[in-house]
Length: 188
Image (cartoon, rainbow, N blue to C red):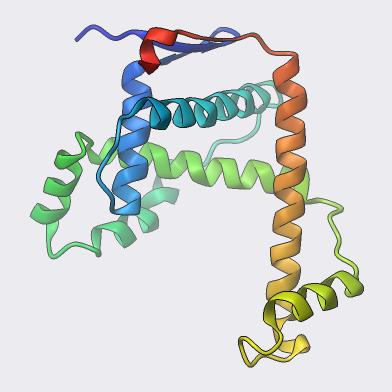
């Protein structure tokens, strides 16, 4: 099978088949049909560019990779959503995937989460006043939880927002220093 280069991020190549595989994996995990429209491919290309920037940083910093067995529980959780092994394997085939694709994707998500937490989470704090304001705006009177009961979830949500802001600010900065080329014919 002949494959085309869709994107290059410095010296890292992202092929059209990788773009299609990532769209299929996302659709499979979301339980929706895979859509390969130009917009979907462009949106996925942006995600893959961000992932390539993170992979480059992980390579430079020699960030440790998880062991293959660490994805076992996630694979099992997905497998249990189906009536049997045959149905599970058929679902993968319908998305032109196999379990290796799924396992690699789940390991990457695990690695990405760990990297993001280790790189950007340290030092992120939320003031009590911010928790109270969030509670009044989003939780009070809607869930039946008191402020003290909701505090851990609210704090985690606010830290998560800040973590994402820090990650995307870093990605924006790194992208300005990185040569990214897209092959427009891959997105028509």
